[in-house]
Length: 501
Figure (cartoon, rainbow, N blue to C red):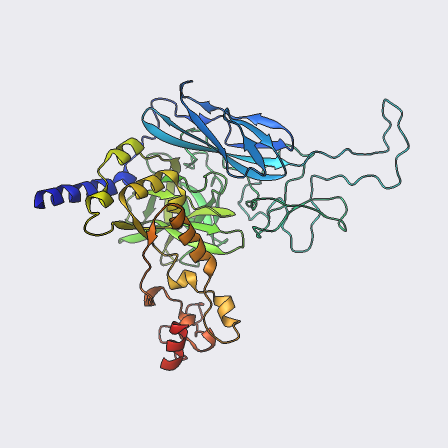
């Protein structure tokens, strides 16, 4: 039994390293790919998608994530039903590996016939006094509605206009359930076209010459290449002395610890897909410093979230590699990658930022002995996950193969469950829970036959300061950070009432 236990332990360590396997930067053969990653079609029209670089005998399963918007046949023929967006997936197994490829299809309304006073070849009736309203390429704003072209900060590349100027670009909204407003020529009579899915923040993907990459910035053209300052005041300067090349990006003139270079990758990555993120960072402060690589995401309600990709200890004057495998979050309207370093007076350098789509060897994963089966008679085998892990097909297969129970890493902790605004507005003064977070996590677990183990009820280090204060209002210092020694804490009876509610 001891011998078998050692074997299982050794296998667990090997299994945990599945996610850190390195991927060649350039494959010897062309990898399977869809003929289109994004497509725009009109209601009633069709589009045929194909999987490239596979044998004709390979069985491909096509699915539409929103059949009300667009359907897809067994042969990949997409038919547009109504205006909105839908994700079309192609699932298949090729050369021992399982693939799931996605194409984002945007369906637009049929063009309206424009009545003008211009003469036509065939005589027609005289036009009416009020011609039909014609959409224009430049939307007319309602108060509070963002334009299709975001306001640019200095140093930010100009967004490329849409390829079809005759058709308006839908204005992004922060309300998932709300309509996407279609621009009109009459500001008093806007036409609202409901969409089944929220619209991402307008923008275009950063062009990448290497087809194996989702993103590659090496600064060899002498420009800052789509990088903006997160603070907005940073100096982003291309200087000589890059990692194994001529140039790199120098980050200086920071006035906040979180200030640094940021790249909008909203349209370069696919939701819930696994990616390998690499970069090289350097600092010259004289000692060791930690440089953080982070996600910054914004959901469709405008709420921001920050996730660690990797924290790297960087020795003085040494290029150090950021090397992380992560899953792109979903249900976000905007996603950015950024770098930061404590002590804003210090400068640092970044070079060769790359994002590469990564896939697990599913045959090897599923062929390995199952941990949950090995210990079925002793205890349930579980692991910590984020909700987006359960929305990634490959990682989900790995989890279900080895585990029967999960614990959600941060989503069910107080800092994410407590609704600050609703709590402060509550009539009885008791805390209000954000049940949407719980519903999402539990629904995903239930759909996949996974039980859920909750965290401890009291998690002091991840409970917001306002929860312990009178009227839920903590004391702050001049920097906007809660004081370490807060004097307006509630009494014992109030705290117990809040915890028991």
